[in-house]
Length: 293
Image (cartoon, rainbow, N blue to C red; front, side, top):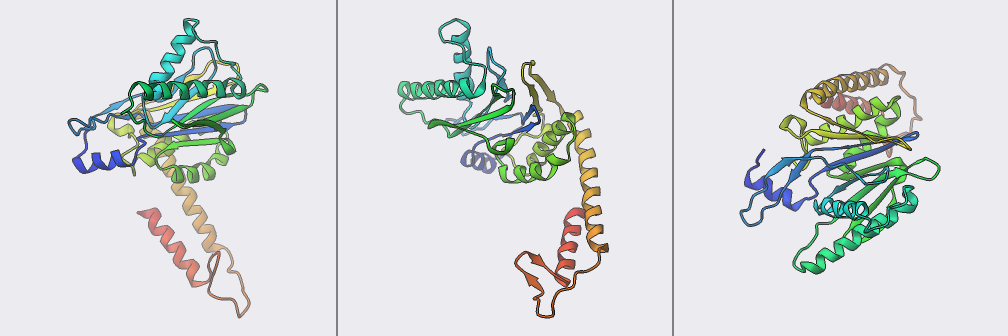
């Protein structure tokens, strides 16, 4: 997939080119990522795109790593894995709250080493997510910002990296409580990435050949990695759209059939928390028009 010059310039100005979503559900972690890799060729002013996997397992641990920003993180991860395999580096403690900071410090050190070797190279600001489990088997999400370093735990059992994070936060906060199974959480994450990709060129669309990658993590069990191509995603998305449309219309109908509230005679038509009376009907009409659109 190639974009015109204006689109390519816009992509370079508003990196990162990705969307990664991680959700902790009970004692499990579900992570999803789009499959778009955009390579910046400054010499020829080109931005060729490739399908890729953005979820990486860390050798001799039960961790998954994902990042939004520079793909150099993948190079650093492979070097750390090789050093561990060859015995040149001590393996990391598998409990993420213990070994995670050490791994992030190793990434930061390699970033600084690369900068010293090539002073003209400037790494894009890159957010890294490291997912795993604590000593007591509880899910744990650790993040860092390269090349700055340091780390912090993701709040609220969720982490969103890359583009359209505000919209994705809203979708997850509204819909995750409705998911009763891990399968439904997987489908929700796919739906969220798919919806965001329809509105942002920085996120790979399954319809354009960029599959969605998913993994399900559970303490002391092998990580389950999956990739969903266009056919599977299309079927899921149609099902989700029908359900969401039905829920939206049911909510609107309940609002319209509920008895009107009575306010004191001095109460204004419009208040700080929304609209009353005729204003409420206008807001509902706008919602209906948006839903139908």
